[in-house]
Length: 487
Image 1 (cartoon, helix red, strand yellow):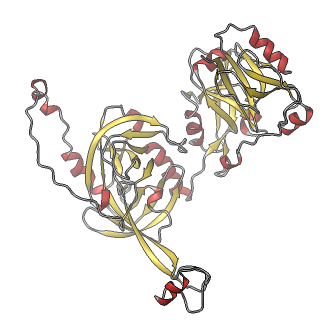
Image 2 (cartoon, rainbow, N blue to C red; image 1 turned 180 degrees about the horizontal axis):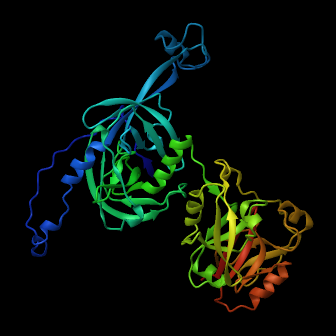
Image 3 (cartoon, rainbow, N blue to C red; image 1 turned 135 degrees about the vertical axis):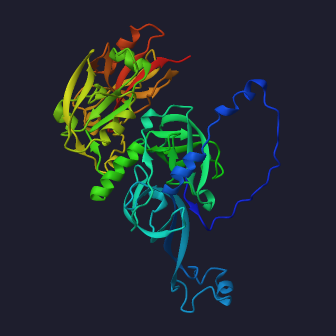
């Protein structure tokens, strides 16, 4: 389970266990390498003063008496002990109470701008910042961005120490990194580890290529900096994977370049805008790359293009593979939204795409993303009544039939197509009953499917072990899938 790191002061206190030291002789090979271990003392002394503790007060309202009916068997019990208002159920007053939580942050400018996680200051009524020299300030929340989990605070102070910003692209897996923060309320705590992975994709977090580390990160570390050995901030500690709520060796930080892009916009205009081009994409596989004539399984395969969107106006088509944006490689489908959303709306960029066996450049003007646009793309399945007489399965075990005019209309398909009525064989690939096959990809060129017989005849001519790449409609979504005969 992925867990944010905000620490609630009202949580049950942990148990401190003292362990007796165990001293073992070093192996001969390791004895000569003791001096190679890193020394973090200078980094802590130099950067520690720029790390702050954050205490958040949130007010909530709770009904003073339980909402219980007079017919409830326990009503008389609660009434005798004064837990039901005299004027009867439903007449209870609400009382206000406070909750407190803590997190971490770091100073990015001498005039009092501070960065932390958005989830640390969510719904905050008061935010107090405490420096390492024990000074306290009430902070103003300038703005927050939930998509990157970044918030910008401001305190009324001058001549504050500040951190140095590094380049997370230069991080290497295996490199030492350290965190300073307030785990479980323990201020100015330093922990160390290595970079475990880069560009990590997490569920529902496709805009952030997280830095994964094994640095000991716990509740209260949220919003604190992740430093490289030069003393530069390369990330903001944001999430941990844990089954207990505590550290289990898997910690994730937002790369500082992505965070600072959000910070700059929050400072300038109080909100974050993101770019979009209006395409739906999917990941490239080795089989899909072969079908489209690409040597490597890289890029983002365009499933569909939004009508009248920026990509459609520029001439991008379904089946195109976006390889580069302004010369920047798109290694996987997750790279494309990260690159596009970081570009300011209104900017003209060049997409390098692969189409029908050759590469070409297409200029596109970036539009602004609406935050609720993703919620509108919920797949729906059109009405697909089964035909009266069921067809026989083809070589891959797909039972196909021709679409009726009503079925085509329900999924907005002008003509052709073959309906997947059933899957009775063992087939590997993303296909299910109700799907509509609209094209067969042959050497990078889509062949429009006119009817079920065309698909069956094509499959019958293939070798028994051969794979086939199809363009498929599922409700409102179009995607590509490579099917292989199963064992």
